[in-house]
Length: 487
Image 1 (cartoon, rainbow, N blue to C red):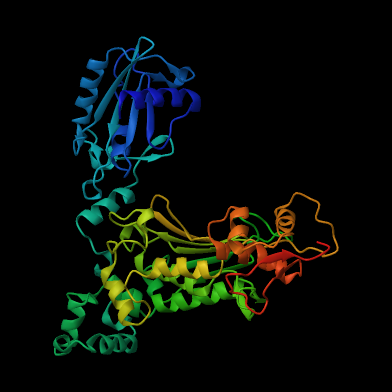
Image 2 (spheres, one colour):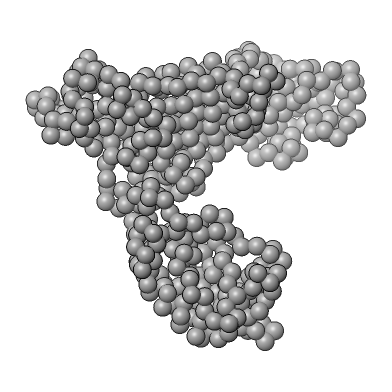
């Protein structure tokens, strides 16, 4: 950063009076802090890196105290950076403001393949940190393993399960898979069955692998009781909120079996616990069934969790979770984002694959295309349903997919006055003059025009509060929406 940017940062910190995910404050008025290792590690282990600002005293109301000696401070900080593995290369900026010296050290995020960055004096397990809000927290053993697994290209989906044998697999399912696998592969079809199983990751030295157990096992949960799906429907917007009769769950199920069986049963659970209503779409003029969440998108979210979850020994006790709340649907999968992929890249770039053997096998079985279309499909289906985009979160070893339920206008008596300041009343007032779809979306502050119409206008059309100017041509670019007389 430039001295001007550093000056703005000092002023910003005094106004904000807080540290952040990428900003750490150190007073350094009496000398160089002796323990920077945790912050150097945590900033290096996140993509965006971070900045350490010296000269602001957090314990004294974020007062601008200045540093004792800028030159000596940078020397000692560099020495501490040299004790990190890999070595951290800070970028320093200095500033003289009101007679006081300030120093910033920008810590770049290192490549995923080189993580975790840790303090060599403590070693990888005890010297690795991660940034959580404004705090530096020790990495868990699993978080460290995740980086190690990517760097060394571990394939936990083909690790042999020593307590299993070929007799514990469903022979008919395995044979069906082999038939499909050989189709269109003349060279592979000439090999013996045991050779094919070894080559395709079904066995390792004759022992069934994790992939084999999950795909064809008689009962996979006999070996891994928690590698299942726990599915719950709760009465509120958070787990723990009780229903009107004191119930914690509206429905609660443990889903077990092979990946294909769990996928089918999980979809049945969701279908059972969401509402399906028949509406007349003002865009098409046709009657149609609308679910709370498009089942095609739901299927992709569950399928992604089953294929891409972490199957290492570190997550054997962690089930996939499906949670149906009053306002949203969530799938929580053990194992955060794998490799170099970032949240903002999901569905836009070809990702590293954590479980390539499972992904190929599910493609052969016809459960997935294995062409990285899952997330684009979710986005497309939610947009068609007039819903907000799916949300993706990477929460320290857990990957979360969230669909928000489309907003519904409250039921209104057509003869009731709308003089209040609710959004519905404001929209009805706005549409006393005929409005286009684009004008309505802009008025509501919603980028997605289909979402604005389906979530906010359609309920009012169904109640007879808004009418279409061209009801026989609902998709006409000349279509206008107008509040009915008396409303």
